[in-house]
Image 1 (cartoon, each protein chain N blue to C red):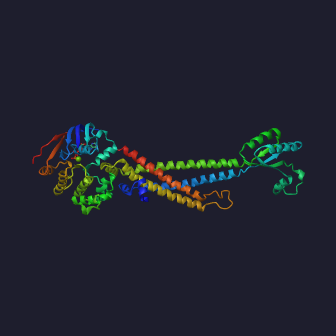
Image 2 (image 1 turned 45 degrees about the vertical axis):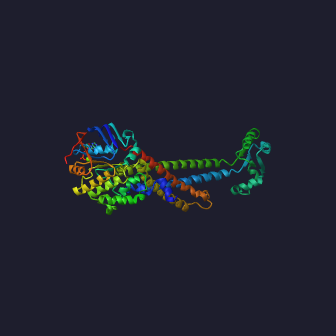
Length: 225
Length: 298
Ligand SMILES: Nc1ncnc2c1ncn2[C@@H]1O[C@H](COP(=O)(O)OP(=O)(O)OP(=O)(O)O)[C@@H](O)[C@H]1O
Ligand SMILES: [Mg+2]
């Protein structure tokens, strides 16, 4: 799915990530941890092509990202569902319209997916809130809405940046359950979090790999159960 | 395909437009500016059509009549008149020659000089009415050359001395109007381009979110294209109607020199071109501006 080969990244100042060597296989479940500011968001942004590595090589869906033009990048992003750290909704559209947005952006007629959108909204427990504006949603509702939007295109890969960041433990578990369910359906999952309890909870249900970012480098980490 | 279908194809569908929030004055101002632009453009266009009609009318009045006047020392008049008549009679392209009798000339002068003048007090020149089958043909040249040699006191007047500068003025008017129209369209493009820049800036967050969820630049551009094209087109339509109403009210009537040179019949359709052109310019400009600008984003 995603290959890193001696890849590194810098915003222009210091080196944020270096010597990344990693292959994320289809159907795998990865956690990415590390202290705040370690570069987790930066790493995920590389994965969904919001950034391109400044050193080394990186391929997403077998495509060399260095050679992908803007339209190619857009098409690749349509195949990756992303739950952004700050959710990134369009504030003037309803929850339902936001969830349907990736379909529209990909040139599909969103009206033909009405049933899918309904199913998805009830799957994340938001069927009653579908006409609410993003500003009217609670933190947990936003996270679940973001997850619904991330999967509407039935992507093979889902990348989530702190999907349980601003929500309580119960709600966090619910979001995690949804992600585990997606993984069981064969989707590749990559989650950035510093919540070790969440990782433990996941490890008891699926085979999850834990990656740790420290001083800009990746380590395979063991998390005690 | 339905009308909405054609519209969607041209300027993007309503759903695509909705991804960009309706806020800010840029779109509204674009409509207003396009309206004023169309108003002026229609007036200028009508001016050009009037110039055209005047030029055509004056050209048609060059109907082939000419006057040959002989004024020479008394002992030469008869001789030169004979020579001139001889030249006119043998030149191909001359369809009729008629010497104007003195009595007729006096009658023409009567309004100014009265009828009771002693005839010999006036030294009237000899006048000959000439009809040519083609006033722009070679005959005029031939006649003038031969007159110069054989009857130097004879002058051929094609009645065009008053007309030519007017025709020139009319075609200059037409040229300047066209230039003004083109400049107006350039101005429209500049204004729409500025508005598009402003709209993209004020919606930077929306644009970046759309990019993040996989929108191609063309998709984002379309959201702006529909809005600016429809708004500029609608504004221009209103401006055009206002200009036409004004023209209808202010239309010169009666025996005026401009009478009959206002818009007639199908000419009323010409002004429709103005909002159409403005909408097309808005569409192309918004699209190109948005795409160029989006390409520069990270
Ligand atoms: N756009 C940017 N320009 C310059 N530096 C940046 C930018 N974004 C992040 N950084 C820096 O890069 C480093 C890594 O940031 P990043 O957001 O990837 O950390 P993180 O691990 O996601 O942190 P957190 O757990 O707080 O979300 C930080 O030192 C941050 O200041
Ligand atoms: Mg982060």
